[in-house]
Image 1 (cartoon, rainbow, N blue to C red):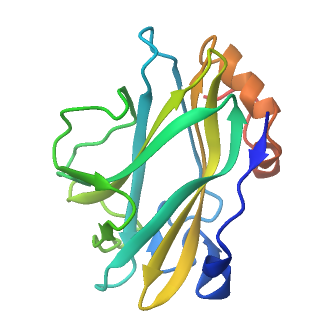
Image 2: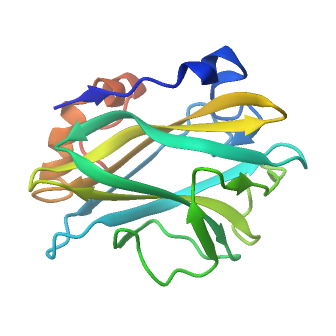
Length: 202
């Protein structure tokens, strides 16, 4: 089952939707950049928390997150929780068990209402050796089929206007395994095909 998620109309009416690197808040600072991360479903049926999605703001004025939603969902239904972690230098989470993962360093807040206050570096994103605003998405499939998100829409407010950052990504919890389970999810995603994601995650 593939379900497209419509972006909030208020986001388009104000600052609008933008690709990475072309708005006040950035991720990889590359419109064509993407991340594909998948993980086996834990044996205890719990979820997986995905990270390595740092947000930064292009000026010294902060932005406030309104929502983070999938652009497209794949596989079966999943529960989700989204957080913004104020990560200490050098501490990066790619994926880890838990819904969400417990005991992480730094401060972790629910993403809605959290402030993005780390300024983008010279290379366009926040350097790993400095404190970072790391977006964490915890997914827990409701069935053995697994499931995931293709793309994220991070809607935020900046200087009174509302924007939505398009993040090209796949985060998925696989049913059978990283290869078999997530390959099926990718093949069922029109958005993944449009972005040119490989049929099997690296």
